[in-house]
Amino acid sequence: MLIQSAFSALRQTFSPPLRAILWKSLGLTVGLLVLVWFGLTRLIQWFQASHHISDQYPFLDSLAFFLAGFGLVVALAYVMPAVSILVAGFFLDDAAEIVERTDFPSEPVGRALPWGTALLYALRFAGLTLLVNIGALIIFFVPVVGIAAFFAANAYLLSREYFEMAAARYRPLAEAAEMRRAHSGTTLAAGCLLAGMMVVPVLNLVTPLFGIALMVHLHKRLARRLPAPAPLTRLR
Image 1 (tube, helix red, strand yellow):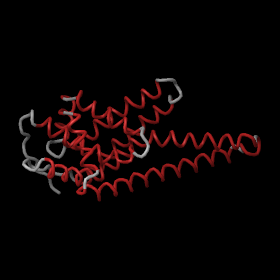
Image 2: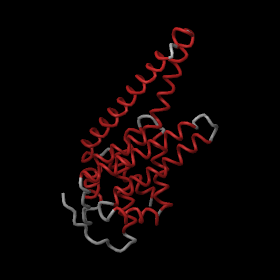
Image 3: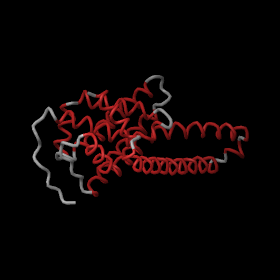
Image 4: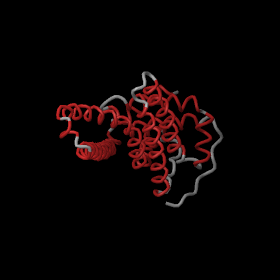
């Protein structure tokens, strides 16, 4: 089920119907990462200036510059999951509807969450993911443990966020969360796939759209095993 969903999601990610959303998703992802990079570089420059590192230890200036560059790369990798969740929140409903109409034409299309609710939900999870990854970053240099903590935490958080957002198009959020817990093995395996993509440069930029398509497929296939949920009546 997961492998079939993953291949279908990969096909959809680069398909013509989703191409416009893909470019928007890439643009927003890169834009947010540039803002984070800019903020981190300003913070490093302020720290160096306030502690007079260049004046007191000139030879450390070049070393600090090198380490700062390496640190920025590492920091951006740990920020990427939170950025991915935030980006997915912006494009979920448009992308999910295209996937539903093209790959499941005989089944009803889901209903979007109210925009404000969807945004708050994405912001909440993005904030939680950022906090968790800051904690994982603190233990980055602990052999094995740092990488394992990063992977495990993001596999869980990404599986939870992406699946519940996709499922919430068909059922209340509480029921979507319950469905995820009932199929925790499958959804967590999907989260492991997304977490793995996060550590691959360039590929991690398409994770938001791929994650949406993946979880739409996964939810559809899992939902076929369940009784049909009561129709949702949401105000747009």
